[in-house]
Image (cartoon, rainbow, N blue to C red; front, top):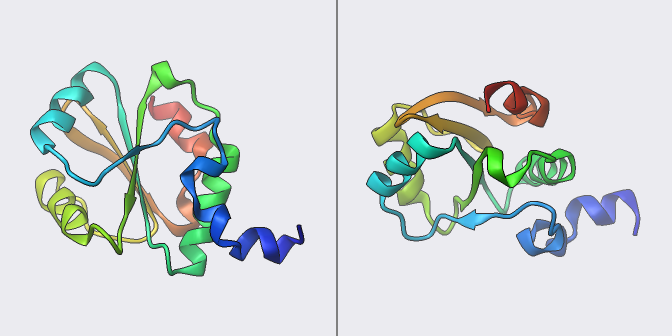
Length: 129
């Protein structure tokens, strides 16, 4: 498949297409549960706009680069178009301004890091986890 085919192919958007990253989908969420979970293991939330080519590019790069072992963090995926209300709740609960694409890291019940667009890099996450 060509470079542009990979970048814009709908299947490239599918979290199942890259099995080395185990994604938990944020569709129905108990923020109390996520907050509690963040005391046991860091939480990584990737917020993605499925209609935005920039978001798709960053999402694909993130998946390709993601090599953090499952025991180091719990990874969540949020489809912003389908679940914008959850993104709004994340912003309110954890005091992080909504952006897209965006990665948020939660530790001990607090947002300790967030990045958007080209600032989203797996290498930066490794130092936090």
